Length: 141
Image (cartoon, rainbow, N blue to C red; front, side, top):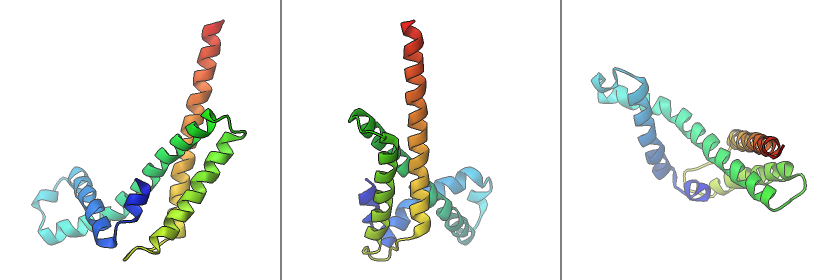
């Protein structure tokens, strides 16, 4: 899914995030419907940066969750570190891939946002592992 979004040309990508930005604008700007179309467009454009970066963070959070689970189930030593490295490498390769897509660019800032999302997902999952193991140990006693 990440690869599919990265492969979208700039105009297609802007349409996707533009739809979410409009929903976001309607939710958080109470007078949105009463504004002129020019003012609505300005608000959508302002929201778009946040929406796009939140999407990066979120989708990589899911990648972090799935990667750490896969590494744990595969009995990989230091599964947390390996999962983080996999996510970092994927984030970097994803931004490199975008450099070859028309109208898109690869940015270090996005690698950092992506990796931060991955680390958040990994941390969240490790916490769940910890509490599940602790709960199972208590039930056995």
